[in-house]
Image (cartoon, rainbow, N blue to C red; front, side):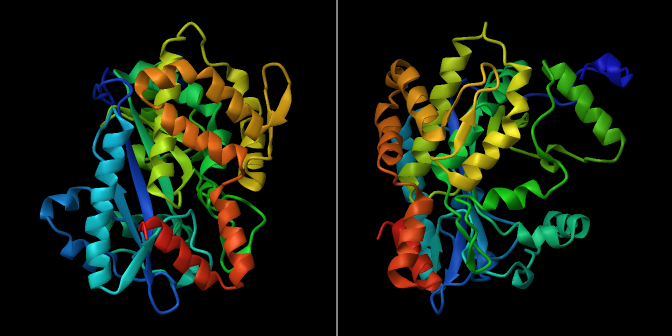
Length: 383
């Protein structure tokens, strides 16, 4: 969509874009708070945040829309080892307070048996506004994702990278899929969380704008129509974050372990560096022709799902497409110090060590979803 097509004479800097150092990375992890009685979701998020020490960490541990959720936010990093260390420190602070409150903490994309109708909206004005606007969808949003931020120098670079990342959405879904159970049943999806997010009216993909100026015009047009009030109203798979100076990947389930979460961030960082070195390769509009199909395949089947290349029509498994991409990125990964992180993901792909597979296997052993949650919380807490 071009500015002249909207017919608005827009001023510059509608959405000022904060410049960031390219290829920096940060992540957000939405986590489950669990009672130790039956491992259902607890309602202790507000109390937990109150007791976090030192107090400065409250900038990085945040409330979410319902009270059985908490979010960890990393600082900005260029190296995966530093990111791992920081997240482990945040985890330690979180677990210390959680155990004081007699609750546990876990990853994964959805709690297996919580009921959305029983969730309590967190007493924050913005969350109450979301509940008022979206009704029951706000409570169904009690799902848990990892968001990956990659730094870019300007808005035009953000638009370019967001379109580049779109082709790899099935990779990030399949590599992180960790929500086979939802509302007490096996959904037959590796990532049921994604279906919850897609229910929101402004989910999906960013429009095919080609510059930040075009994006600003699109944004202002929707704001003028009363459809959005800020960038937070977009629930896209990938979106620019102008206030942070990043591009944000939003399709990942929260993994069961910190190391997997960091490896996914390293993968995104490596892709970014590769594509900024290939700027003559403009993102193809046809990428979006098969986006929904490829995305569904990743959510439903995970790594064995089908990936269709919209440019040449070829088909392969998502697993094979990921492995080919890892080979393509080998030199860039080495430059960034990400070889070990990529190899961790490669080993998971080759040996079917997907989190969804682990969760299903755990249920087959015990026959109890409560026991599955107990085991996944021990895994995330490093026990």
